Length: 241
Image (cartoon, rainbow, N blue to C red):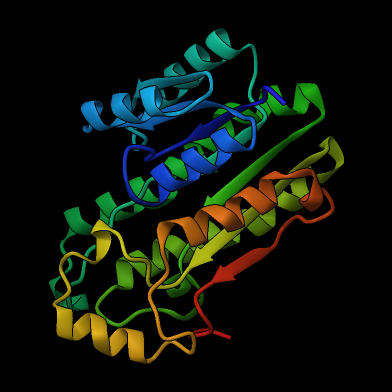
């Protein structure tokens, strides 16, 4: 295949699992990280494919533009973008500060916008490409004490649907994967008791693994999903139907 895939937030969690799965499926990988250089480098060495790491602050458009320009230079193009990088925070609505709000939207929503905008000219030129955004079930339903997170992820879903309509004639698909509760560092603030209660609410009676989400991304990235665009693939164990 030898097609280049960009994965943001690739050094850990869902991004790391996605990178590993895409490498197995024959993609070359541009791995985006912000702070975890060692983990990103370790992953690149572990992958059995052409993989390079790039430090980038996805909340800054200039940083994104420069990074994408370097990736295009290194890989002579880009076929797939997985907008995965994100942050989470649990706070009462009235305790959310201006800084909390701006940071949440800058990373979780603006980052996906900046990367999508940067890669699209190359995809449009080639009349092919795929963008896969990682949303959240809270973007579909809203989550108590996560209003800013829910708003950002709802924005991801809206952007996905709108951009799919705009890019379809250029042969580009845009979809979202909407995870439920995934056993990653993002749940580290929850106690074991809270996690047990959450698990009991899930019809499949377990938390998702990062690999569960990676499998959904791999499907949408494959030729088997070439006629799917503007969709939200919910991977939540049945907790949201």
